[in-house]
Length: 244
Image (cartoon, rainbow, N blue to C red; front, side, top):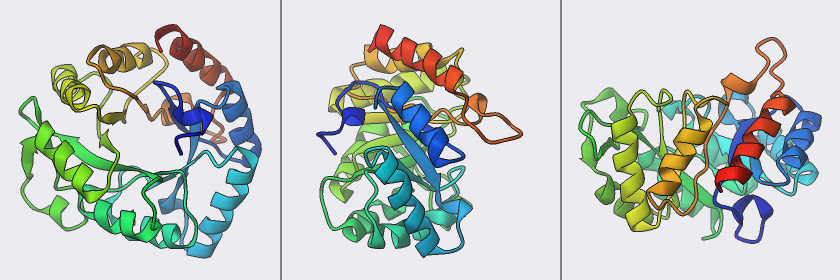
């Protein structure tokens, strides 16, 4: 993945599209600095998902992010089943399934993020994000410990979800600082809009995070059609060029 345009910059958008045409518009508007999310929760058939990953990938330089769908832990296995047949460039996964996912892709180059939740205490994250562990009491550990465990499992990034925009600003800054110190990628997710995008990404870059992959979903989509608005992508990319 290192040779792709969408991975050679400090900021890479992660957005959704409702069609291949929409995906192509987004990708070209962002000049290749974007990955397009296809969500496991939208499929009941693995082969159909595999077909779409391949079709979309052919249209946009393989810049596909295979997502869970709203951070749904019950989709972890669907993600891995898809990965057994096709290897997306970017894969979203819950904490307990990261090592399993790395084994499924059978390589060390695909980017696998690891979903953790902000904990009540700044500087800590909850790693109990699997289908069973999420039903139990939270398992809150220091961010640096989480980063070490994620790295040992073959993961490449912390996906912090749900962010709720800047509602937990102090927590976010602490997590960004830990990622900066460790040279680890951070993927803020949830409640990111055109209005708060610059501050969210800037805080991470100022903390020394080597690469930020903000997931910007519903706030830039037409609620009736599911189309991601290209005008919003233009605004986000302008900000990316300004601060990145």
